[in-house]
Structure formats: structure tokens, C-alpha cells
Image 1: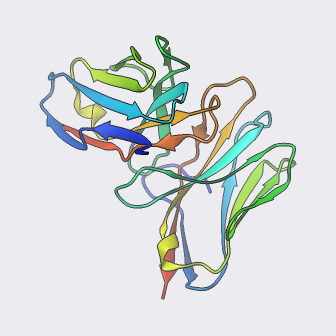
Image 2 (image 1 turned 180 degrees about the vertical axis):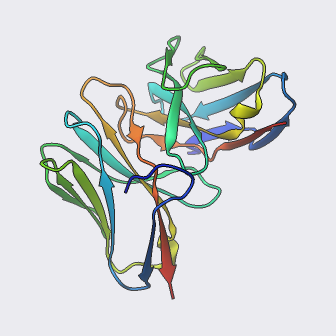
Length: 112
Length: 112
């Protein structure tokens, strides 16, 4: 039972490049989330999903897109990366809406 | 606790002592609260949660106390061990919301 798996673990991008972060969970959870974590700040919600085929905006959605084509996967895309998107990104999933989230180990992204 | 800026509140305790980490939450309508532990380079790990119809909940070596009158949450760790060194986050959820809102964290340091 792997829980929540994120790939890649590290990535460096140049401004304007695009990339996709992949999150996979094997707990059959309906709810999935993408958070970003910046130094000295708590986790901020980017986008979330309440089930397969659904997505919704969180607190800081600008510059990001998401897709949930399969229940177990939640993808976070950056179409044109900016230095302000340098951060650590965490994916999470939960059985109940907004409760007892299980987190992945994170992706450290640097945009130069 | 909560803070603004790049510097996390820090709590230093002696190994074997009890630790108390405090959190002031923002929304009086919040009905669910949770504590996470985050070690360096890892994702947040669930510690304990509590609903607003309770004042206290105990786990293994941890106790969460909720004071709704002053919107205060605390995490007590008994007999603190070196492995307890981490950043601790509280989070809250309001009824009907799909997301957790995280505080900025407190760094717990254990002195030998």
C-alpha cells in the first residue's frame, strides 16, 4: 500500500516552460488536492477534485490547470512557468471531504 | 501558533518533557480541526483530529484540546522524544467546505 505517490520529486524549469506533476493514490479516495508550500507559510490550496472527472479552484489557482481523468490520478499542469511558481508542491487525498488528508512526499520545483 | 512572514514560531523543549504547541484558528464556524507533523523533506503526516462537539481527544502520547470560546487549539505531546522534532501545523474546516485551511506552523526542537 503506497498511499499517495508524486512524481517527479525534483524539477528545474526555465521561465515559460511547461510541465505536469503527477499524483497517484491507491486508497480509492474520492477527494484529491494540490497544495503549494512556501517558506514561512502554511500550505495553500491550488485546486481540488471531489471525484473522477471533476475539478475546482482553491485559494491560488492562477497559472495552474488540473485534470482528474481517472479516480486514482490527479495531474497538475503549469502551461508557462514563472519564477513565482518556485515552491514545494504536495498532493493529498481523503476519504471524506476536507478531512484527514493523506499527503505525498512532495515535488520541489524551481523556475529560473 | 500563527505568524506572518518567513520566520516560524519555534518551541524548544528538553527531551522527556511535555510539549504544548498552540494554534489560534480564524473562523468561529469551523467544525473540524486537525494536527499534522512535517519532518524536513517530507510531506505532512496526520497526528490527530477533533470535531467541534468535543473539547479533548487523546491519541498515543498526544492530546488535542479545543477551546471554542477563544478559538484556540493546542497539541500536547507527552515525554517528547528526538523523533518529535518537526514543524507542526494545525488546520481547520468550516461546515460544507471542501478544504482544510492551514496555519503557518510551529517548529519543535528537542534539546538532549
